[in-house]
Image (cartoon, rainbow, N blue to C red; front, top):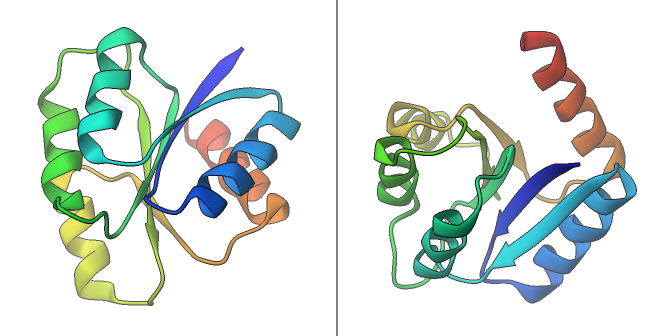
Length: 122
């Protein structure tokens, strides 16, 4: 079973994303902070990581860079979650190592399409 790590300070977003991924036959784990997410990565490597654009007390771009420097079992596909359509911010996230982005709000159909794109690209 594939694994998704959801990193967002909003419990509502984490629970909503978890329900979506679990309905798509993923096992989902959550982290409220980047430190919590790094702790989770020490135990297992997800296939997909959803990383919120803004997590209090941290820099998501640095967090993504840190993931890319880690020695992991596989290279997780990182999706940067944003609330604004900001091309410069998306570019910074991509330069940090994000593979793609999604705008909030998202739904099951959007996540499913994104996962299909990932499968086609692989």
